[in-house]
Length: 109
Image (cartoon, rainbow, N blue to C red):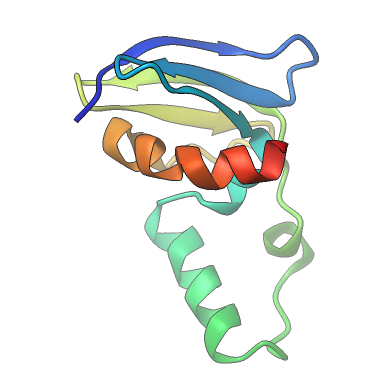
């Protein structure tokens, strides 16, 4: 598993930029990261939508706040992203973020 070398926000604060020890430079749009939130409640919402695309969900779940209010390391394995609406229960492990790098690259292209 490649190690995380650097982490920063891009100039307009719309993407998290991570550099990995294997040379991958990944740009993760914040909207994409919020949509991939690994916490139990966000995963549950994604599963509900997949099972029943006509289910009515509260608007704050359909278009959550994608402004990044803070980042804190979690041990040596990940980071907690704190979003502008206070949501901060998702721990983005480095392994998970590295797996998302290819999908994020397709969005940035």
